[in-house]
Amino acid sequence: MKEIMQKLRDASLRAISESQDSENLESLRVRYLGKKGELTQILRQMGKLSPEERPKMGQMANQLREEIEKAVEQRRAELMDAMMDLKLQQETVDVTLPGKPAVAGHKHPMYNVLDQIKEIFVGMGFEIVDGPEVELADYNFTKLNIDEGHPSREWTDTFYFTEDSSILLRTQTSPMQIHAMETRPLPIRMIAPGRVYRKDEVDATHSPMFHQIEGMVIDKGVTMSDLKATLNLVVEKIYGKGTVTRFRPHHFPFTEPSCEMDIQCHKCGGKGCPTCKGEGWIEVLGAGMVHPKVLAGCGIDPDVYSGWAFGMGLERLAMGEYKITDLRLIFENDIRFLEQF
Image 1 (cartoon, rainbow, N blue to C red):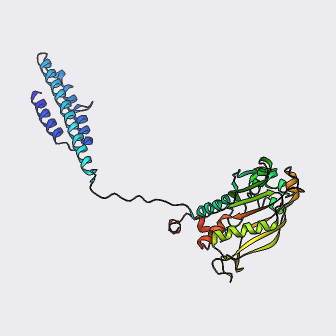
Image 2: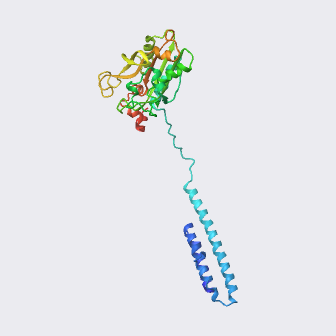
Image 3: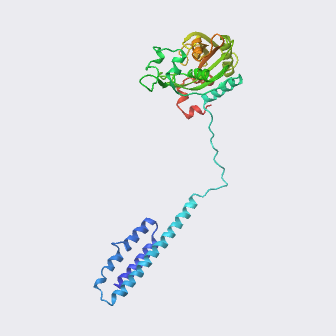
């Protein structure tokens, strides 16, 4: 048995010293010292020895176990050191190499136009206000003189949250007119940019989610000519002097009289193309004089005060500014498209 243990000692220590990874080293430890290991098998045969030999063989077995355990721990430490050295070599950073330039992002073209518009209106003394996208039907419709039965209140046109149609995703930024008139002292000069939602089919100039900029002035002696002059000035500041606009009569329940403002198509110069649907013009906003019923509903005397309001589509303004031919490009987040701006 002594010779068997000596052979086991030589074989185990040699195998451990030649082990090249921790997984193999662990398998060797189990092979020699585990419950079914070779040393354990030898110890089970000690019952065949004489009483005089057992203590000597037991001492030799314990010494062999200690040697194998020590060899395993030593080799494990060596492997860990070697692995760390290799990792340090592989991850060495050459500080003399030039650094990689950081790619900086930039504002979305639509928000560049929004910033321009904000700057223009703030320069004219307007205040920028914000409001909720989830709105009460009273503010989105009723207080704006849009009665029950109006097509815009149908479920086919509007995203409602409740069965009684009392809470919805706002279809316009016009509710901010009511919020402003109910909470701010007169006179009022404000714009309210924000997202709005309608059940529109997606095409080159429509989307179920888009951005509007609502504007309103309430003061004594405000006229329709003030509205037209202000809007023409804004458009010229965005697109340059000589930008061609037109005002068309229209009907909005919350303004009287009402109009729509178009700009000449930037793509075809008014000749007609897919971007303007062959019309030569692109509608950018609706506007008009604030209806006396809307003023009175907010506690403002329409015999003393008058006002005008407008709602413009931010995406369409961006399309004109950057000569974008399809509104869908603004929302698709294609890096190839956005990097142009």
